[in-house]
Image (cartoon, rainbow, N blue to C red):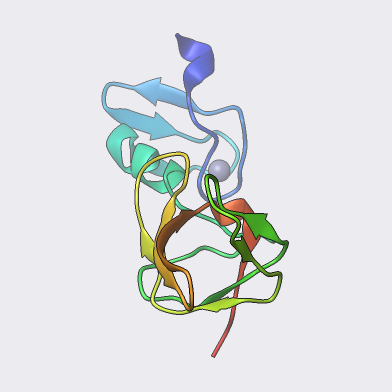
Amino acid sequence: MTDTLPPCPECSSAYTYQVDALLICPECAHEWAAGEAADEAKEVRDSVGNVLADGDTVTVIKDLKLKGTSSVIKVGTKVRGIRLVDGDHDIDCKVPGVGPIGLKSQFVKKVSG
Ligand SMILES: [Zn+2]
């Protein structure tokens, strides 16, 4: 059970240990509640590691075939106003010309600005 502790959110050290409800990092002395760490682990990141948030604009980084249709979302397609959801396809969005669809964060890249 001790080897399931999450790494330190401050310095990514893997040598964290637990004292009651607190997790403690011996390397940078950061302390945090175990529950918070679980929330942080749920961050959704794009293909290059940017943290995504509701309302972001992303572009698709590879052609994505839509299951059960002949439609393809082309690489470079811009998708505005994404919504993060739980699940295998962790982005809910509306693709122009395609409609509402779920995308995987690993196949998109955040557009800044
Ligand atoms: Zn640390």
